[in-house]
Structures are given as C-alpha cells and as structure tokens.
Image (cartoon, rainbow, N blue to C red):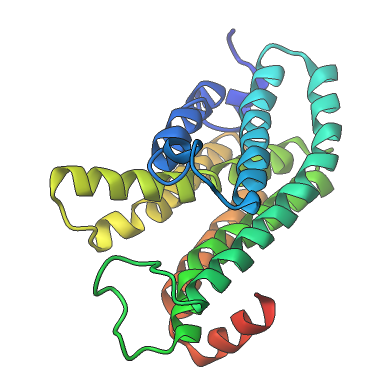
Length: 251
C-alpha cells in the first residue's frame, strides 16, 4: 500500500518493523520468565507480564490499523488503551517496588562480584532499579503526550512510537546480555548502551525525515531531549545519595 500515513509520518515500513518487538520480547524474557512458567513465580510478575504483552500487542496493532485505513478501529483500540495503560503503569511501578525490595532483602540481583560485598543493601537496591525507573517514566510521559496530542497527527505518531520503543529497552537489553553470554563476550559499555543509542539514532532519522517533509519538528525534538535526559540519568543516578534516598521513598 503506497504512501500510507504511518510511513509518511514516521520511518518506512514502521508497522512491519514494530512486529520485531514480539520475537525480541519473547527471546529477551525467555530465560527469566517464559522458560519458568511451570515454576512458582510471584503473582506481581505474572500480572505485569500479561499486561505488558497486551501493551505490546496494542503497540504492534495500532500502526497496522492506520496502514490499512481502519481508522475507526484504530480509535476504538486507542480508547481501550485508556483502560489498559493505567493498569500497565501501576503494574510497572509494582515491579519496580518488588525489584527494590528483593535487592533490599539480600537476594542476588547481579552477576557474582558485580556489587562490592561492603556496599549497603539500600545502595544496591537503588542502583538495581535505575534503568527500570527510567523506562517506566519514559512510558508514562510518552503515552500521556501521545494521548494529549492525539489530534495532532505528527505529535501523536511520534510520541506513540517512542512509547512503543520503551518495550525494546528491557527486552533488547536482556537479549543482548543473553547473546554476549552465549558468545562468551563481555557485557561492556557498548552492549550496555546499545539500545539507548539505537533509539536515539531512530529518532534522529525521524527528525531528518520531518525536516525534509516540512513537518512540525518539536515532537521529535522533545523525544530526543527526553531520551538524552534519561540516558544521562541512567549514568548519573547510580550510587548517588539523592537517588538512594529518593528510591527508598518511592519503593
């Protein structure tokens, strides 16, 4: 289908590329979740897993509905997301709280030797939830902006793409870690920052596309600024006393 609206507002074949989020999510979470479905798992993890899968399916479905000009159904699914997303956001917070408490209670939350034995559990717990907190805030902000500017096609499409790509972070990072382990490679700074940089590159390309097509630039510029801010916080917050105190209050 030529000249469809999704490809005009975003990257070519955006709808089809987003389908890749499904296998990336499955493979990324296979060792820690999908392979352990027959074993006892805390209910909060199951609830969050189911809700995130629903959000993933919505994220993949919505651009296809636009692609095939099913605008009525796109709007209907969007309204359904008003019910699903608040619960997804709450479950995300509960997972962060569970992760913080797990680290606080002396559970092993990192590779052997990753944390010094002398390090206080409160500091370990705060460091452990930094990346999850960044992605959680991004999801809340991008989805909210996408809804607030739903009548602005450029802004809505840009913010919803950013919201969908928050799924890539947790799943993609895990998949990269699994791949590094399988190949005997170190999980170095390149691997650790790959998804952050990859998303920045995507929206840099979107910025060029919007500029060339004389579309409004402020939505993609805002996304880039938020991505850079989150990237900076990911590197600045760990072990910082202010974050340690804030994490203790939040979780």
